[in-house]
Image (tube, rainbow, N blue to C red; front, side, top):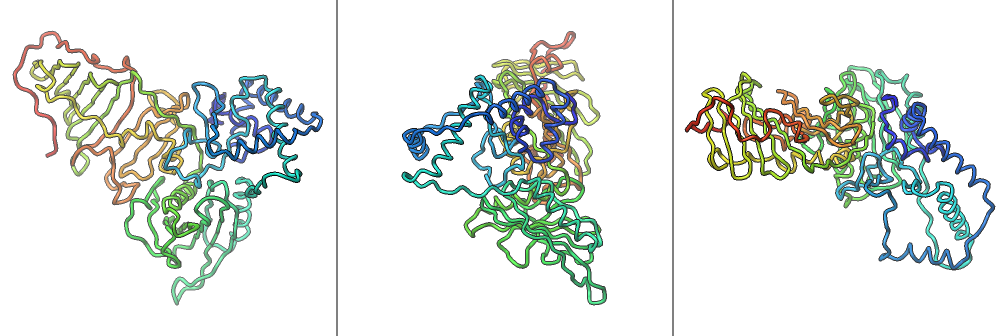
Length: 534
């Protein structure tokens, strides 16, 4: 399979049915097409889906009895009815509203969905002869609905919300409308690659304004989208020449909720002069400025939903939106490895600490290195026994764990959240796919944490769909999340984690959790002082 599609068979299989029916939007359609062109097995599955469709078209029309439909409607209306998941054992369901979310998190707003709809047919169809399953399910559903529309009695079935135009067509419509006005602009406008699924283009227009009393008029661009579902009713984009500044807006006060960064151009809070109720963000692109604001549908709607929309749409102006599948990591039997570094205010290294902790937290090894990379001490704890080894004096001290200071504290739950909740963070735009890279020789998606105080990456293994590692690169003067951003990776006034990963036990180097001192070492008496800040 070619890596240009970024899809594995397990992922592509979810979309073969929708692909066969011509229902996928770009760029997902192109990714599935590229995979099918390279993968004989998936090409055969696609051909099977199309044969099922051909068989369905040959079926004679039939109608269920009134009693059958009444029982179905009664089951749907029953609030106590149990909905059982139809999926293969051992495999998580992929919600229909977003490819990158594997489990529906409690805090994820359903109004910030992906533009890529999941396929209509569930994976359980693969467990039965596909022709029989498709014929029974689809024909019954279609015919039952057709009969319900014409039945003269019974419960009234409410009309569903009209299906909006496909996102691909909305984005294309926006591009075409803006292209028609581009000649009036002194800059090249940029447009998003992400919109929520219920988006519809409302308007594209250009306006003229004076930069100063002495300067001639300049033209700026306004684009507005409206949404047919969710708690956010409208998103407005304004791009203006640098000379006009933040026309209609003023720079806002620092706010960590409205600060994020993916490239070298940060997004920061703005105040919309026309309405203080609409959250807004802006970005300075040098030749022009970009402002985005979102209108909640009511005064009681959560501002978090509007901000999540702004984050996803604004970041898609910086980098193409590419959703990925991310599963919670399974840590059974794995060893947590962390690297903690202390630096001076100028960024010079003071010390580095490598910590390896077993899954049951009964075993731990701590390697402490000095500023020049020299190993200062190795401390190992196994149950109620412990040893500290000091290479410089070739000494070791053994005894109870308390004698060498006990277990080194583990990272907080928040610091480890990317391993378990990366799908939630990606769904809200906190994690953004920067493209394909590698980690320890494994191909991985590079997911940037856009609101962190320091550049932070989560590496998602393309084979397991799990986070391999999290790296933090403290860089003086670079704060993606703005001046008020906080970090769960900070451990003290001068130290923070720079690496977190889960390893197989055999990958733990340096003797693992051995309590055996090196040959030639003798018993010492002085316990090394734990590292700290100057």
